[in-house]
Length: 158
Image 1: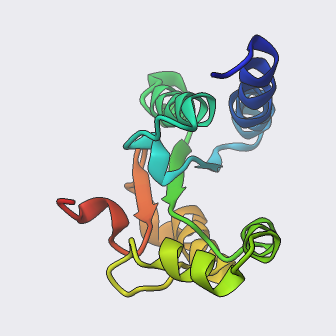
Image 2 (image 1 turned 180 degrees about the horizontal axis):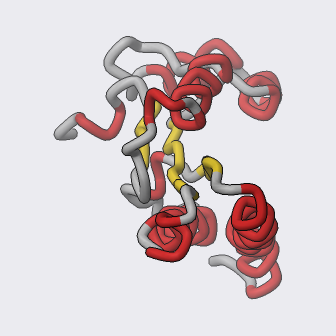
């Protein structure tokens, strides 16, 4: 069960924070002639985890907000694009700390990696490469879209 306080905390961080950042970015971009916003959603923006309901809902919200900004004709005609990345598990300090906190860190790591086709999770540089692409001119026709950076996790049937 998720308490109201936990629900609100997660939404404030993951969704309201993105909303506030986008609002400021759009204002600045309208004044300067456009730009590219890249939000961080999650693989859970496109799926669900019954044990992480607040997180799942917040990341679905980030995807919806990204699309709403991207399809706004005023913004699009001003040269503003808005996309998001949807990363799977990444070898961030938080994940590494989680593994180290378990009774068997190697087993915890192996269990998480077993869900991925390549039997590894990604690293932050791989996500950064996707962001670099989305802010570049090479993605000039990407708008209101999401880019999945999950090593094939969501493409699996099981």
